[in-house]
Amino acid sequence: MNAKKVTKTLLAMGLALGVFAGAAVASSGTVKATEPQPEQQVRSVYTNELIPASQAVWRPIAVMMPTDKSAQPSYGIGNAKVLYEIMEEGNISRQLAIIDNWQGLERIGNIRSCRDYYIHIATEWDPILIHFGGVCYMQDRITAPDINNLSGTYEYGVGGEAPGSGKFYRTSDRKAPHNAYISAEGIISASEKLGYSLSTRPEYYNTTHFNFANGVNTLEQYPGAIPGNVIDLSDVFSYTKSYFTYNPETGLYSKSIHGKAQTDGLTGEQLTFSNVIIQNTNWAKRDAKGYLAFQTNDSTMDGYYFTKGRGIHITWKKTSDHEPTRYYDDNGNEIQINEGKTYIAIAQAGKSVKYS
Image 1 (tube, rainbow, N blue to C red):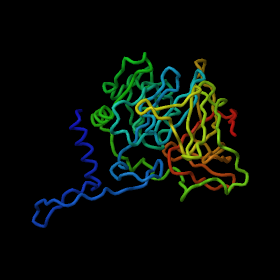
Image 2 (spheres, rainbow, N blue to C red; image 1 turned 60 degrees about the horizontal axis):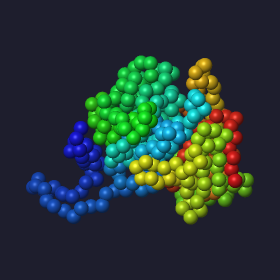
Image 3 (cartoon, rainbow, N blue to C red; image 1 turned 60 degrees about the vertical axis):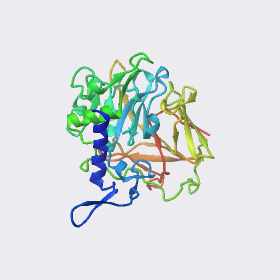
Image 4 (cartoon, rainbow, N blue to C red; image 1 turned 45 degrees about the vertical axis):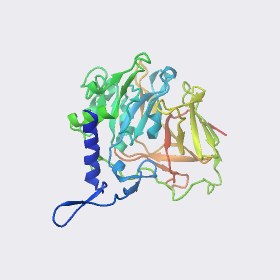
C-alpha cells in the first residue's frame, strides 16, 4: 500500500465520524466553502487525556517488544499508553506495548515472539496483535475467531499461518532476532488484505478500563500509604532490573532498565508513566524448556499502585479475556488512577517489590 492509499484510509475513517468539516452542502446540493471547524475532542480510553475523535476510532495495536540489553532501544515504544512487562523462560522479561496512535510510525519494534498469556492480557484491549511467531501453547487461542494478529513467521512457532508476514522487514543495524520491524503502512495494508477491522469493534471493545480520578489523586486520603519515590523491581525482573524514579517536577515516573534510562529509538526520550501497577500473579513452570504459565484471569491476588510519589496495597480482578482488569484498594473501592500512561508489571507471586 502506498502513502496515498494510507491517506485515503485515514480520511475515510475521519469522514465516518464526521470530523472533517471544511465544507458544507447547500440546500441545492452544491458544496460551498465554510470556515474549518475545530475537531471534536474526546477522552482517551487509555489515558483519559483529550484526543481528537478521529484518533479514538482507531483500533490499537499490541506489540511484542524485547527487554534484551542488545535489543535496546525499541522504536515506537514511547507511544505505548499502557506497557506491560512479564517474565518469560530464561529469566528474561518481555514487553507488550498497547499503542493507539501508531498510524504515522515508520518503524515499530523490534518485534519478538509471543506467549499465550500475553494474548489473554492483550485481548481486553481488542488490539491487532503484532508478533514474530510464538510457542505451541498459543495454538488454540491465536487461531480463535476473535483474535486478529500479524506475525512475521509461523504464528505459534511450530505451525500455523504467518498472517501479514510479507509486511515485516529487517534492518542491518542489528543482528537477528533483534532487527525485525513493521511500519504503520504495513499494518494497514496487511489488515485490509486479511479483512481485519482498523476501527474499534463494538462487540469486543470496552469503552472503560481504568477508573480515572476526577482531578489529581495524590493518595493522601490513605493513612497507610507507603513511600513511592523509587520503585525497584530488580527481584521481580532480575535480568532487566526495571526501576522507576519519581520526578516531582513533572509528576511522572521515569523508567530504567539495565541500569540506565529506557528510551524510544524514534525520539531518544526516556519512557515516563503517571501510574505504576504491580500485579502479583499466580504462575507455574510448564515444561523442561522453562515455558511459563500465568493466571491472568483471577480474583484472589494482590499488588501495589504507585503514583505521585506514594503507593498503596491493592487487589485485582479479571473475569474473562475481554473484560478489563479492575484494581481495588483495601477498602474494596476501585482505585482512581491518574491521567496519563500506565505501566503494569505482571509479577510472579512471591517476588518482592522494593520501594522508598
